[in-house]
Amino acid sequence: MTDVNLDKTYEHDKKERKVHRLRIIFNRKGCIGSGHCMLSDPYNFAWDEKIDWKALLVDGKPMEGKFQGELFVKEIETDSPHLVMNAAKTCTPRAIAVFDIDEKKFIA
Image 1 (cartoon, rainbow, N blue to C red):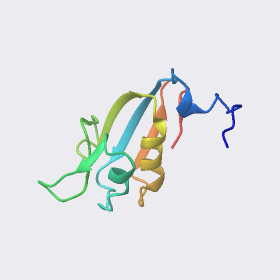
Image 2: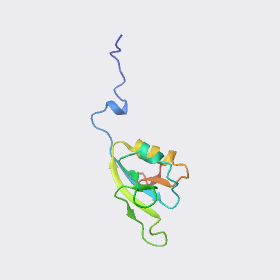
Image 3: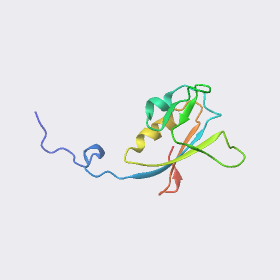
Image 4: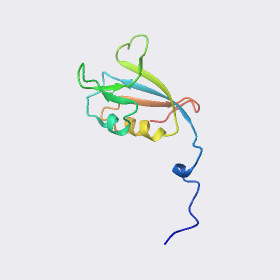
């Protein structure tokens, strides 16, 4: 049985999705290497096999100042913000934060 009155407003059915501008802030020192972020968002997180098997923010830039080498930041444009939001929410030590640049607020 097919429902011909499907809800066409469902986000995954839209042809044009909203593009979100997000800033990812990653505290590498706080990472315990559980791997939840990599499972949730393999596009932005990977293993750092060379040093200590903690997570690595792919293409992340180290923040300047007092916490250089501990905090990394990356700005992305995505139509799938749920990936990085899930990475932040499943991070056991809460070492990931996600900031919505357009809304000017933390979303995860």
